[in-house]
Image (cartoon, rainbow, N blue to C red; front, side):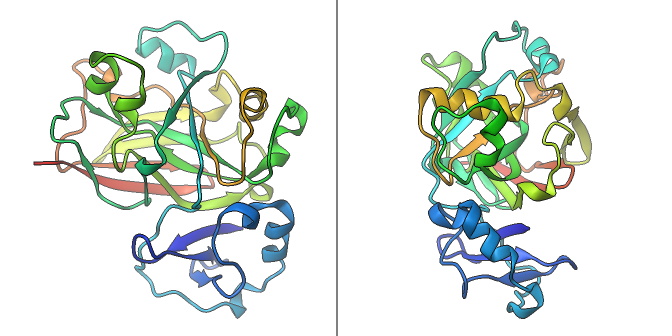
Length: 281
């Protein structure tokens, strides 16, 4: 299934994409795509529905984040060797973990307004996982059974905030809108192997990133298992798995995102997100 949330910001309803690519309203069957609705048995119940029996949603309706009620956004840094190299960093011996504020979440096609002091605005197209079943001390072999599905996240970064303003990564990663997520949640039965997906990012029409999840240093399964050693993962938690080479900070000269540019991220089987960036005045 491809699950979505649609409607005005703050008033989204749950839905799904039918086989013809039309949006269908799920609100008669589930209150929200959050918490218990993401459990395996809940998803299986939704899977039995005939999409043609669900109300159609008008074309052009805004999409929100594909899940809600997210308690944590967990991000893995430098998880592709080529990205670590372009950032002039060693390959990490263990996953490099940082977090983004949940207030950074925004819809897959929403505009993103960066803080007025922004000078080094960057993008990071990433495969993201959404937890569907509580995970604590799970084995790598069992880890993906705790994942409800996969989606796309742009781990937007303000590199001056991140690297030049002291402290850790949080202030460079958590501005409003710095976590576009979507366009839909693709359940795990539709993605045979999360390590077999092409990841691409464009700034306007320029292809900047063209990577593949097979090149991740730490696999999706390993990441879930690893994180569950340190904290309980709950339904709705989002894990973003790192970005391939081609970020603005790695270019010479640096290719910072400018006011008015659009960043688009596409991943095989997961669709694409596109966000126009502005800088607050």
